Image (cartoon, rainbow, N blue to C red):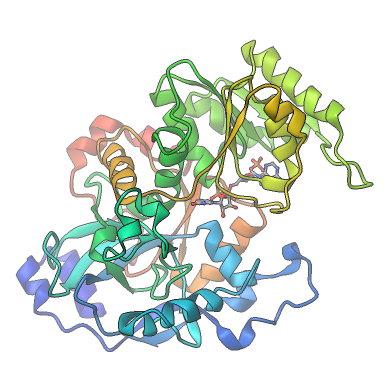
Length: 444
Ligand code: NAP
């Protein structure tokens, strides 16, 4: 891979890159099938990604006609890498086995190791014979919607495809590696004003927040909507705040701690709730919920903005869903994409039906939505929320930080890129957008 890295750094042409040999093996972050029971009996927060994530050499798989090899300069940690590395709620080898039964090309994924990672920025090395729009040398980012384009159910909203998967989570050969295997319809142009690591952290979370708030497949936010955002400086929350501000909405951001509250203010989010300081206890010790605590949160929102939220951006799940349904305005929408604190949800249905509220489910984004989210990033209208980078060797520590909620925004991982700050092709646009805005989370 060294030769490939040198070619990329020296600005080699697409033809030169196409002529470089693709190595027969590459460095990757993996979990091992034989270790899926290693954390049995431990609580979730005791399961340690540093023990289960290994960085080692793996064989380069054969390339299918609709795929590309990407030399990965940088990648990022997403919460799904945490799930894979703690083998919760199920081992992801179950997904790989299922994919392995589908086709000859699917069979490649069913291995005793899983190369994880659902984000990447890098350079196309080779394309399969059926790829038309991309070529070696193209600088790209990768989104993680992995669909079979010969499946008819994939041709309305591809997130409704019967066999829709998340690349690097429900498929193998993901982005936390020096090389990745991706379908051509996962590729998007790399925003030219961003460094490799700044470009690598967005696709999964940025696209998810775009669909949840902006897309007609999500909450279809309007000007003036009050949007209540849990985890507002976290991975998806940090983009959600930007979409609300860009779209003329009024964000109410929830965070834990004064540092994060300050960061939210710096993003332009005026209305902030520090959940640590407010010490909400939505669940009593006896396992029932306390409506008085929901009411206290609702009052806190009203005291900030004078009304109830039209949209609640929900993902913590069990801990917060009862409160989210309660505080949502009459006729409003709770849009949910996750359940970090537990997926068996409880809310008071009277508050939902009597006030004609809706719960809207959302999951990642289709190609068009991911493309639009990437376009806004490339225009400098959405900023990367990279707070810190780790070397690929330290991927376990990086995942552990996200698992333990010791991070802000997104954590980047340098794969082939030997240092930060490389890959900026449009310094003029960078200057126009403003270094301060692009690197806000780095300085937090
Ligand atoms: P993240 O970077 O860890 O941020 C989540 C934030 O939520 C945390 O920083 C924390 O912020 C807040 N939070 C955590 N537990 C909470 C609780 N019990 N009550 C209230 N707030 C809590 O993670 P992320 O990348 O934003 O992802 C969030 C969730 O969405 C994960 O479960 C992830 O798997 C899921 N997700 C789903 C999709 C999809 O396509 N379906 C896509 C992306 C992410 P504070 O401590 O500051 O409040």
